[in-house]
Structures are given as C-alpha cells and as structure tokens.
Image (cartoon, rainbow, N blue to C red; front, side):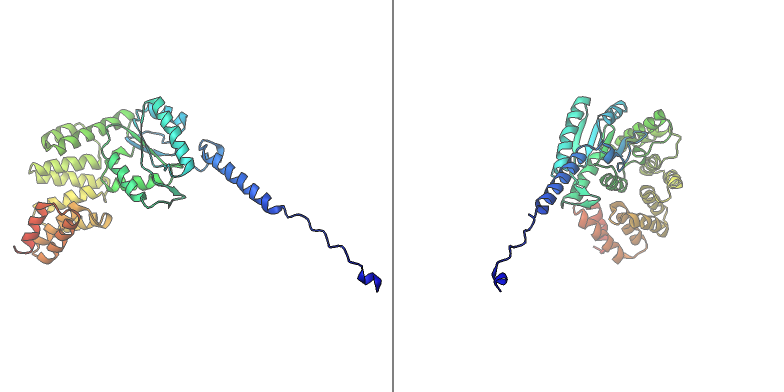
Length: 330
C-alpha cells in the first residue's frame, strides 16, 4: 500500500527539435535553388535550356545569354538583346542587371518586355500586353535581334508564334542558303518593304529582281506590287508561287483572294479568305475581302455583318464605312 503512494517520476520527453531543423533545411534548399537560378550557365540549368542558335538570323531565339554568348552574338552583328524576363521575379531582376552590364560592354541595346512565367504558367495579368509590345518592336527592326527568356523554351515560342501571325518576313526567322545569300535576301526584303510602304511599286520589283529564290515574302511583295500596278495576272502568278512554298501562308492566300475578286470570281476569292480567317480570325484585310465577295454575290446582309466586324476593330476606316453603306443600300 505504501508503495502505491510513492509518486512515479514522469517519463522524460526528448526535446522536439525536428521543426526548426526542417525549417533550416527548407531555408537552405531555397537559398541553394536561388543561387542555381542566378547561374543559368551552370550544369544544373544548362541541361534544361535551349541552345544558342547555330545560325544567327534577323530575329534569333534562345536562352539567357552568358558572356560567351554575347561574344558570338556580337560577332554575328546582333544589335538588340530583347529580353522577356521580368524584374518582378528577384532572380530575373539580378540577371537583367548583369545582362545590361554585358550589353554595355559589347555595345548592344537591351529592350525588356516582362513576361513572367514559371514552366509556361503566366504569373502577372500583363503577359499578353507585353508580348504584343515585343512583337511591335520586332516588326520594325533595323538590325539583328536576339530574343530570349530564361530557358529559351516557353516565352520565346509564344513571341515567335505571334510574330508569324503578325506577318513578320519568314526569312527573318529561318536561315537558308549561305550567309551571304541569307543577308542579301533579308536586306532586299527590308528595302523592298520600305519602298512598298512608300507606294513606290516599280522600285519594289527592281529591288527584288535579283532574288531567284522561292520565298513567301518575296512573292508577297512582288504580288501586291504587280496588283497595285494593275498587272493582275502577274500578281496572281506571284501569289501562287508563294503558296507553292507554303500552301497555308495567309498573306499570299489573302493576295490571291483579291486577285480573284478583280477577275470576277468571288466564290474562289471566298475560299482564300476563309483559309486566312481559319488561321487568323480577326485578320482585317481578309475580312474586308470576304465582305466584298459577299457584295459581289449580292448577299448584302452577310456583307454588312462582315464590314461591321471590321469597323468594331477599326472604327476610323472610312473606306470600309463606305462599303457598309453600299451593303445597307444607303
């Protein structure tokens, strides 16, 4: 009985140290990951990165450039470093600062269009707006540009796809022929585009005459120059040749559609415009062409609906407003 009254010492408990230990491990892991992200040239990152392009084109795409890459880009005449990295991400902010120092060293210009994403998942709501800004800049280059994100696998692909839809010359993106042939074609296309924009269509044809290559952009510029000069059969031949290179090229499909309209073949024209709109549903030129084809077929209701769609996107287009009046019988 007396033994039962003697208190038994409480069982000693080991101090719980696993919680702070786990926190320390996580903190060290996060710090290590951050240091790895700050070194995209390390073995831990290189395996996941895209490679620097073998041939530098007017617009080249790839991963974050280290100093060795800057030397290659400089040697190939690159003037612009177009970054899609986002200073709102701390490690990308640090890398952008390092990139600016390297660009200053090698005499290049950095333009940043922040498109933050992690494994292709958009982080901030201005992603698409920054993408559009990048495309607008790249459409009016006066010298080669290198476009990059962190790995060169996600953000750059979205920009490249948007450039194709925006009608950037295909040869700006793909290196074909020798280096001399490639840059001669690029320079002639750029010069011809300036002449076309100025309305100097005979000069466009003269500038492009030495190019014997089959190229969708050469065919497009030749085709519209012939069209503006009233040489519709020549224009049709140009657009057909462009489509023999790329059967789904929207610019040559669009041009061929307008040739069919001039030839009095609105049904054939609609087929071309439909092929364009299946790729780019809001393509303004194809929508106007489709509306005109409806007018030729006396389907004024469909024509009016199409012209209204154009005016919703571009309310100041007085030419289309005139077409709408025709469709509405005013």
